[in-house]
Length: 561
Image 1 (cartoon, helix red, strand yellow):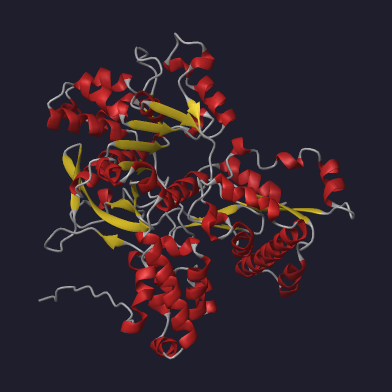
Image 2 (cartoon, helix red, strand yellow):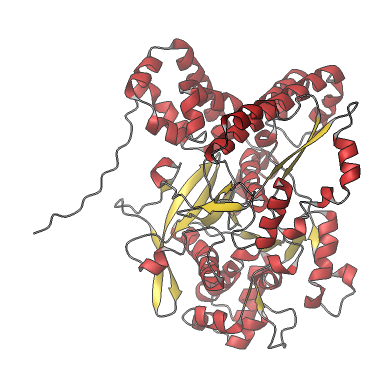
């Protein structure tokens, strides 16, 4: 008779005096606090780099003798206490939202922010590019401001692929599995300690998902995971890869994200008053909210749709048709055969929601069109992108002049602390005071930037550039070693780039419409700029092409050559 298989999870034992490290590691607030980053780096600098700067992995990998040493290190303990005190102050301080709208608004308002990817930190690889980085910065900024927001996404077992280049500069992909026990994931559980599950109706079956949480400062990010024993092998793979698979896999993921995301929030006791869809991937959340309004508030479909639209906003990102998900009517009908009856509308009404021309039966179902139709406010991500979007989606309102198409624009911003070097933050502390971090909307504080001496600002900028060059050299050497380059070539990597030259960074997804090779159109002019001894210029490229985008891969190979 065979023995039952038992699973054990071995976690490091942190002495009581060092328990603050665990608390700090499981809230990604640490990643935008330079003092917290230096605290974890102080435990073991080399090991911290090896584990992709992940505090959770670090605490799992550091040996017990090193922990005992830290227990006797008064300097380290004082540093840890200082960071813990800063974290506690951050979590309990009165926020901009409370000051502006009062404590009552915190109870009445709950915003759900849906995105297929969230770029919080390199050690949490559930993002691809700018869309995810924007979403991550959105959560961090909401945390700083105290906005009552919760993120909703998917927890990918393999995340997005890891890239490496062969000797010809052609992109290769590998898909390492995410070890959930080495990520700052907190399982959402029922009162009896069992995982909290939700289900979504799929053709002929229910698909179940469990809920994980990542705490982003004051803001929770809920991530759905179908890789559980209750699902079939195929359904367990739905949340395997970000942007992997074909159209059938994509529509499954988007049903889990949109429909499942709303169900997860309700299972957690949260009913959002506003839903923000970051790109069209989550547009099915509008349909689930309509179903919920019909069921709980006894509304008919038109009234429920109006109520949902009033509390929905949508951000479109991609300025080319190919970047907006479309599904054939047959695929949508098949995927929704179990769910559609609960909406109490017929197939034609459902399909019309995703078509610019509702009566055109040949037009495929577009997630961006669905999102626009179910949102009260739609926006592009820059003034120019707003103009492009109004032109792209004008067909939804053929009776209006194109400039009056109701799509506005809000220029993308960044989360200040995530993008600010430690040296620059110290400069701000000296000349702006320490309130710039806690009161980012106070223009009077930012006017003090004029007080920073030009020479001091420039010296700080140069130190940052020197660190960038050192970082690029280290990465290049590691890349060459992986490729089996000869020792002489690896040694030469220590001399690439000039720490004193104007350095231009190009770090984007390599899609053809982003025109990564545009700078090479006029090689003579480029050579004269780059080789100017008086004013030297250098360019650092980074970025991935989608595994099934040969055009993007060709751009990378062209730049490599």
